[in-house]
Amino acid sequence: MKKFATLLILLFTVLINGCKKDESTTETPEDTTPACTPTVVEVTTNISSPTTWDPCHIYVINASSIDVSSTLTIQAGTIIKFKNNVFDNAITVSATGQINAVGTADKPIVFTSFKDDANGGDTNGDGTTSTPARGDWGGIVMNTSSCVYKYCTFLYGGEGPSPGAGQPTLEFQSFYGIIDRCTFAFCGGEAVFNGYGVVDARSCHDTNFKLTNSIFYGCIKPVFINPFLSIDNSNVFHNPNNAAQKNDFNGIFITNEANEALSDVSWLEDEVPFVLTGSLYITHPGTKLILAAGVIIKVKDSPAPGNKITYKEGMNSIQGYGLPGVYFTSYLDDAHGGDTNGDGNASSPAFADWYGIQDITASISTNNFCYNWSNILYAQYP
Image (cartoon, rainbow, N blue to C red):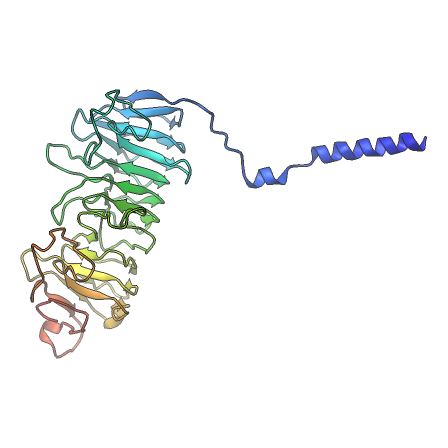
């Protein structure tokens, strides 16, 4: 009888242990992505109902522009290719639309050229006859504040709507977006100083815009924003595997903006300079521009001199102006922040390349209420 009771206890223990959760599987969910050989799906029509793109397909955009007016969810590992048989080859997200593109470190979402055999194979079936290049496709234009891009790779974008023209690979027209841990490589844009950047948010005044932990290399001009937006020091402006491979105009370009920021703005990036393509105004009461050590601000004047940094309420309006490595200088100054205008030794900085830093409320002895800090270089009124 005792032996029978012992057997019952052992059986009960085995059953109880067999029913317990395996806590290790709850901490790290299994990859439920189905094993598959991706097949090609050609996309020629607009997306007007909730749609999911998955890694079991390679989506080929074969239209001048695809309009997204509903929610487009793009799963990790999905590849999207754009044909360049027509100019532009863009995706436009309307006010009612949304793109939710969230990949992973191991399975990024890839937006690339139809000629790109390295991602998704030889989709155009021409062997090695064609190779991808800058401007093979257009870009994605956001007319909504509902788009998220995480762990995405953007390759060979930036073609404009007409021959020889460029456009952003990601453009935010008055709307914000989230870009995190993305890579932008070999993308076009425009070479002129006030032309489009690869990520272009010059029209976005919404401080919810975020660009973080992303990589730019082999592109024309990586970023173009406006003075309302903050940029931290998490982005990289060179190829992590080849530090010499950078961008043609390796800087964060700031558009001329008549309206000043209404809240504090932080510019913390120290790998590349911030380039003012017009005057910067820090004149809203209490608003501050916050700089970190090593930040360089370059001013592009056309014609010179005229563009300047104007602020009020004393030097506290520019916090960090005296930190180590901080300079305010000419766009032509290669000694500080590198060859930002991308012309090698063809140009050099000179006195009066830009106006200066002006405090419109101060009583100072220098010309036109401009400061003469030692880190102000090549200004007419230093």
